[in-house]
Length: 254
Image (cartoon, rainbow, N blue to C red; front, side, top):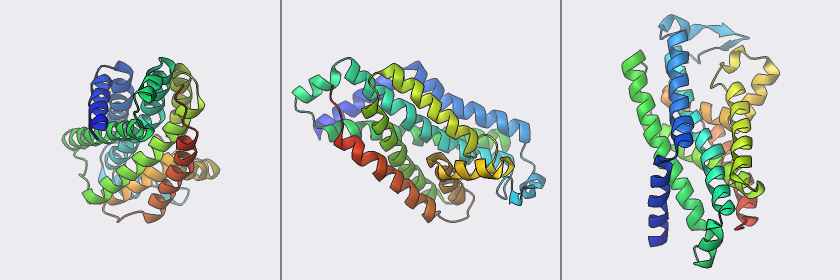
């Protein structure tokens, strides 16, 4: 346990010193939320906009919609970039090999990365909610417990995907490139940029099936006071198992 605490503290210090992580994981979702909320506004009259037979903004204002959706982006960015880049970089520099030689178990490394992700996205979500509230009068989460459960399960899913990516790629540059590609591919079709209602039906269905699309709904529903999305939470747990089991089984120290 002492090793886990020490490693987690070290990871947090390193994260604060890494410009890419701070800018992309925290600043990018915040800036996009502010930009999209400024463009589409916070007019309650827009809440009933319909496109392709669907409510564009899911019954809330655009600012409310993008605040919750952008929180999901933070979780995705952490899992798809921070986790694989860190672990692949450690392998590249021989740090994982030295950890193995000092009898540090794999679960300590994995849990320290997940803890870093949880602390970071909780802080990022709080900043997002406060900025949106004061800048656009956006709603605060109506069911905070439901939002927190969705965030934790989302972190497990994306952390597992990131761990699998770190197991497959050989270096940090490859992890960064693949992570960026996966993030933006999901971000564009999962309801975090254009709402799924305005996308072609097939593309919207693909976006919903992706883990980020599931997480957007899982966060938005309790945020808007619509209850817990148990189907989405179950699917996200499925992603965590499908990605996490082979990632741990084939985890490479060097």
